[in-house]
Length: 126
Image 1 (tube, rainbow, N blue to C red):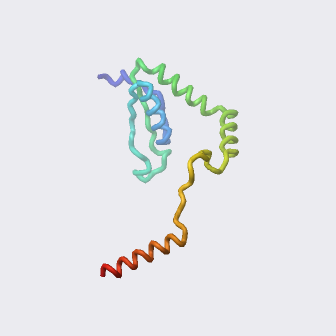
Image 2: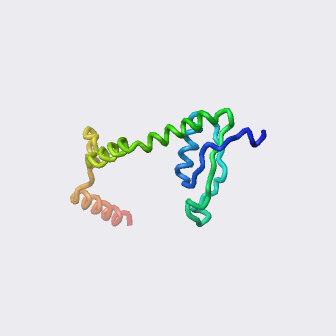
Image 3: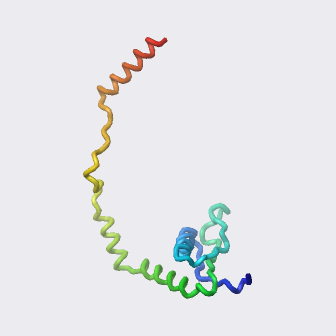
């Protein structure tokens, strides 16, 4: 297969962002191919040192570009970001599933009885 059958749809330096874009394109069945999979942290250099590319087949180019643009536009929506941040900050600190009883621990008396039983068992078997 010729190299010109593939087209670059995303360039980036941050490995997590590249992983997310690649996974998003794979989930849509667009068969992305990543060039430059070197992990900068393993090389001992920062994320901004190794640019990586994500390519798709030329026939999937428009769908991939539209999908990436839609995901970037959704994440850049300032009002939505502020609303989500406020929801996170105002979330209750305690767990919401009150129907599940908490796991109880042993009381001090129970622990003392268990230790005494093990000591007696040890002395008896010795």
